[in-house]
Amino acid sequence: MRSAGWAFARLRRELRSVTDSQALLLILFTVAVVVVVGLAAAWPQLFPAISLILVLMVGAFWLRLRGFGLLVLVAAAGLALLAHRVAGSLAANQLLVLALSAGLMALFVRGRELLGVQGTTGASMLVDLRDRIRSQDGSDRVWPRGWHVQSAIQSANGEAFSGDFFVVAGDEETMQAVVVDISGKGHHAGTRALMLSAAFGGLLGALPAADFLPGANRYLLRQNWDEGFATAVHLLIDLRSGRYEIRHAGHPPAAHFRAGSGTWELLNQAGGPALGIVEEAGYHPVKGTLCVGDALMMYTDGLVENPGRDLDLGIDRLLGDATALVAQTGLAQGAQRLVNSADAQEDDDRSLMLIWRD
Image 1 (cartoon, rainbow, N blue to C red):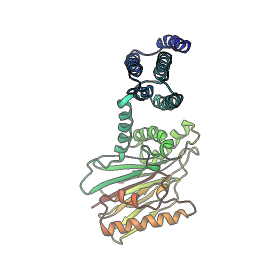
Image 2 (cartoon, one colour):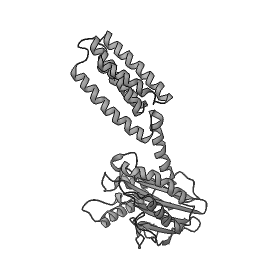
Image 3 (spheres, rainbow, N blue to C red):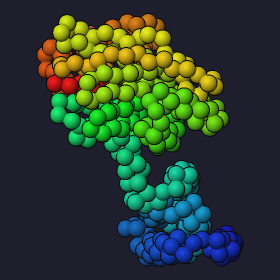
Image 4 (cartoon, rainbow, N blue to C red):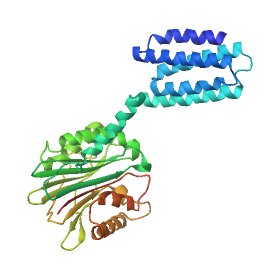
């Protein structure tokens, strides 16, 4: 009984720091614990004490760390009371399973609290945030007749968040697009991608095209991140004439498909350094014209990079796949097909954007 008394005393001290909504949830889960303990005392064969795991699992989904800790204390007090009143109701192996489960659930709750999410609303918020980032790729917008934008992202190891992202802005006359690859991969880079996608979305269109990459570079330098660099390719295109300017910041070269020759041409003239490395970096444009039937392709290095293989070989393979795609099926759904067919590592983010006119 001494352990039960200690648990209840600790519970009284901690309840004062729990918010009203969390207190209400804690009361409900406490009632559930009392019910389970009562059933276990009355019918131990039908309702073993280990059934408390179910209450803890649901509590871990809805409670914050402090509230969940209090729930564990309540469960511990209930188990102590049950063991005192009903001999043999709690085996050592059951107690071990309950303790390990509570510890793992506490880690789960702590991770969700760091993200600021509880319950189904919090989880759906993250999914909505990810979808909003991906909706900036311009593929759902209605562009002037004959113009098409399509993109695809495959996160490292199939994770929900990626260190690659696209931002597209424009109107009836011009379009700007940027493809960005944050240092790192998967969810480790995903948090920085969340922040940068919003910032770059604000810069794109607000600054003259020639100032976008320098502005993005200054913004990234101000963050002082340990892994604070990113590569990017930025495109400005006149939707009336097809004339474009493209600038690279430490990024693999974009490619221009020329319908007349049926081949892809790399736009690999000297660009500038990656973003977030040096101050006052310069980014010189490559200029061209996108004629009817032509296309531009921008991608990240995860699509063409493989350990022990020259990067140029990966780019050549991608261009070969893109040439075959145009000849066989056209560019419709081409971005996703090229990402899926790439000979690339599964543990790196892979992204590609296609812009074409017909």
